[in-house]
Length: 287
Image 1: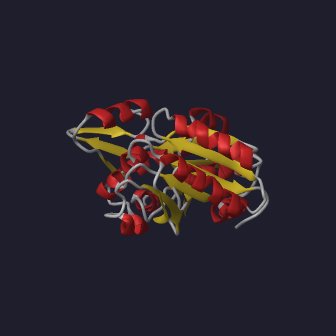
Image 2: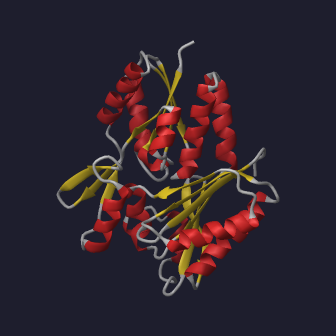
């Protein structure tokens, strides 16, 4: 049986170690800034991006990989792993055209068996699905079992987001169901989630610390006594509030496996400075 090569995109927020250990291939999205175009996490790393974001007056934009980019990407993966079977899971189609480009590329490669999935999520909400697929593939699971395991994680994953402002999300056109908060956010901190692949509102709090406390309360309710199988904290820049949030989580939840890292430049473009994302799914169960 041909091995299954697992692929995803740069917004999965996977660390280099995880990508290497599980042999996951990433295709980068694009960041456009003035006259320059960068590859997310490749020609523009997260620390450099956030430094630019604080000092430049012009606003970056993002775009998905082209169909041609995907054709070359799939061909390279097939050759590198000597396989004709590729499983790909990508950022929510409601938030990006990445999956659309991948689907068009697949149609141009009839000799490859390329299975594509809409994560209906972002950041480690996508990343956990890619990790699940790669672990299953490495254990010898067939494509049907990989799809089944990924579907279970997708159905049970929660994505919570704490922002300082909605300005960046609004400018980038990804604001979705949080649009109703625009105009009411003066001196408030927005709390968001991902529902049906789109950004949705969880509410707002007057202070940063209160908003983070609210996220922990929500996580405790959603987990309903179950420990999280994995939990990720993804954030912009070095932020002492992330340490505070992690301390609260350790006090309240039975944490098994914690991932932490910077949001990629593409995600930082839409979240802005001081964004924090918390992503988790429960041990042995779905919501």
